[in-house]
Length: 473
Ligand code: FAD
Image (cartoon, rainbow, N blue to C red; front, side):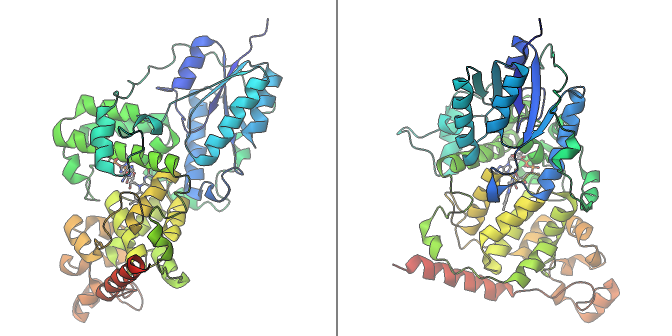
């Protein structure tokens, strides 16, 4: 008799190890692994170019691990999965949960639809240490401030589940005839600008596990201090892998516990908890990607200035640390966290451009672009978020460069036209005497621009705009 498979629907859990839904399915019988590209449902929040590029390679890697047995489909899962269950005779469909608002709505409808067809539909937690509804204040409401969320909420909750082992046996039938080739998902750009991203990453589950192992050995010792310095090897660069689920946060959490101690371990766990906090914010505020959490910001006098925006996007603001970050983003699909904060602050405070512009550019260019974390972080930077940076704390890009890239190696790498400028002028080239600029081959007409805004003036404008907004009735 032909065996009827259980469908495991891969989404943001592109791994075999520590995959609760896949593990459970593999214990029950033959598993049909399926990935469905759903470009239409997210609407304006659809995946950006760098994420699509990452996804292509991640699926390729996953398919290799599954010996070519991954089924690729494209369209609305609400239609596709019930039809696939009918055509393959599957009596069970399972998946790991996602938390974007449209996915929650769609998945709930899908569960009903499958159950009406007599098909078991089950979902699992495969990407959070604690799901948003598991961490709340004693009165049952969600935390709005990070520190109590982490200290009381997370650390006071039941510890996250331990990572699961690999499925002992994976009996996968070959893909059904409606399966598409991976290329038919058209995830790669037509003009192959993505080639420049390739040397920076090993994409897929093995690459993620390798990055975690290197981080635990070389990055975690000293993480608490070193994580702020973009040229130091103290950060894990796991964010795209966590986003696509090539690795679970549980693997990172328990890996760190096994390898680290003290303040470094605590700080890394805190960062993983910031990810959880952001997911909670999105879960309880589905409008987070668009709507200011602090209503007073609805009156904020954002500017519209395409030329300034273009200079920021191209890394030509005239502020070297900002430009280094923006160029790192384009060249690698990643930007160091400290520099995300500096470049973000520059956009929303010194340029007074709307945080939506930053959110959208990052969503397009970051391989780790994540609706919850990106929106929450931009609201934090803009000052309108739940637990936002105090508005008056405006990052000074000169001081930030001097403090966190004092040797200039990060800035010189991404802004090579300033490479020969002495350290003293690296973060403020406009202060260098003509003779120094000439000797370093720097010309404001030909190589590197004058600053687009004056730091002191723009800072004051931001503070004035903020107090006017706050003081309006
Ligand atoms: P590590 O320091 O090694 O941290 C480990 C993991 O903890 C990260 O991979 C990430 O999952 C989580 N984490 C670390 N810092 C934060 C944080 N501040 N908030 C939430 N989670 C965190 N991160 C994304 O994953 N996707 C985004 O779209 C994103 N957009 C951002 C936009 C802005 C304006 C800012 C300021 C930050 C943004 N971040 C985003 C958060 C942070 O910059 C990245 O998670 C981090 O730089 C990833 O590098 P890493 O993996 O080496 O981090």
